[in-house]
Length: 113
Ligand code: AMP
View 1 (cartoon, rainbow, N blue to C red):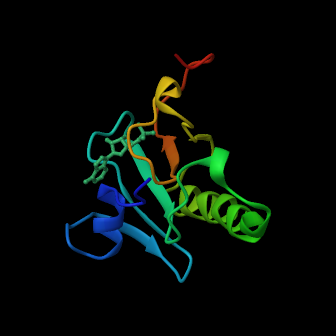
View 2: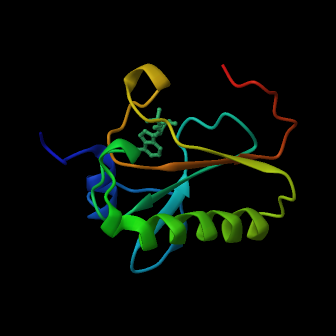
């Protein structure tokens, strides 16, 4: 199965994004269809399809992504915010390159849909 997605093109700078944060392991940018005043996507540079295909060797990377998501939320001035990782089409995943949604800036309901 191909690892190629729209996020691969964003990582290669073939299509633009509204970049928020970048380091050697990951890139964060604003979601093109925001569901809240702040809606940022954080993606690893490594093409991992979703958590179902993540491996033991990705342990450091996955931890890094969570810590970076907190750093980004704080930089955005959020004290309450949510991370969402959709895994699989029935869970709402539409882009098959692992990504963390960082969502905030309004009251968030629970349970999610
Ligand atoms: P998911 O449904 O969890 O796979 O999330 C994919 C997200 O990627 C959606 O929230 C889309 O709005 C977002 N998205 C798709 N294409 C782009 C793009 N070119 N730039 C920024 N966000 C995008």
